Length: 496
Image (cartoon, rainbow, N blue to C red; front, top):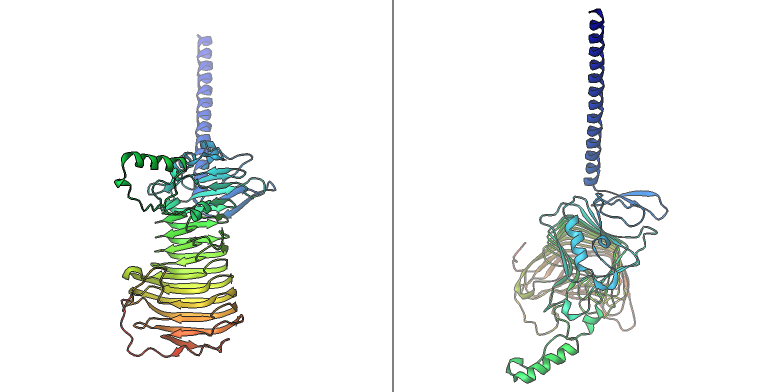
């Protein structure tokens, strides 16, 4: 009996010990899960914060504040849960011959679902990409397109446009487009090459023969001849890179060259930052604006080199709060506001600052241009610290702008007021200052301060028509044609 009690006591003790050990193990397991969950939470928090980590050429990890998140590891980065999506992992070949459009689209569709994701376009390859749209109404915010090299951050590869007419159909308005996104960044040291020379040299498809009136056998012969010659590119030329309806847009470091038409366009965007951008096209390439702004607000363009065949920067209607500084322009047509008011439309542009800019061998320096018959206003403009070298017309307002063809006279005009020119120096080849303002709605509030422009032999004197304002200092050459005060009986205008 005594022995039975001892055995029962022993069994009870053993059972108690087993329960204790099991409970302790269960607690540790739960603690590990909790720690793991907290770690995942912290990781997601950093990812959404907009902090970028990247592996530099020396093998050190550096960080910088950007829109989006990047974590580059040794070798080619993959999307293994890190939010990085390398186009090579989605089937891109990068041989310059294989169409990589679908691979880029697939990488984007995957990145679109991850906040702070990165689409990586690696160096050392030529990616042939056709017309493509990266749309984002349902995308997560803060997505980055990164052109990178894990060795020295120097990208040798390119994204190149197809030159076959079959890739463009009857005409497309843009080649690469980002639309309706919040927090989109395109950065790196890569190149977007529109291969525009085939477009500049190719004549539009305007056949004077009415093919519908031809006999069937002649029509078939013409079609065969077109197919054998490869056909013609459409007369509608695309913009190389366009952002539409997006907020918090950053473009940094990349090169855009040989665009078919405009190189970079922002339409209906807010909070735009462009920096360290290179645009490169020949001075005789037609209609190849560098940066085109339209209906966009709060834009900063800085530390960039722009060379093209049209306006280095073109500021169109609906643009306000634009700050341009430390930009080199040339060749090109200069930095322009307009043309505004075409086809009797209303145009509104305000609060534009252009300063610390160099223009060399350009058609114009800083220019405002409007069509006759328009309405609206241009106001609150500052051009400051502008260096011009061999520029045809450094300072220009043209309210009789007409881009070829026959233009009719109009009784209304876009009102221009509050335009300030400060510290503009250098050399010109035609006319130093040209103010051609509207008969019905003269320019008002034009000020000149510290203007020193030296002309070449045979250059003209300043020209003013219906321009009113003030000389803050003496100018070289003297701009005696600027009238003081306000115009008598100036017509009321349709204000913005």
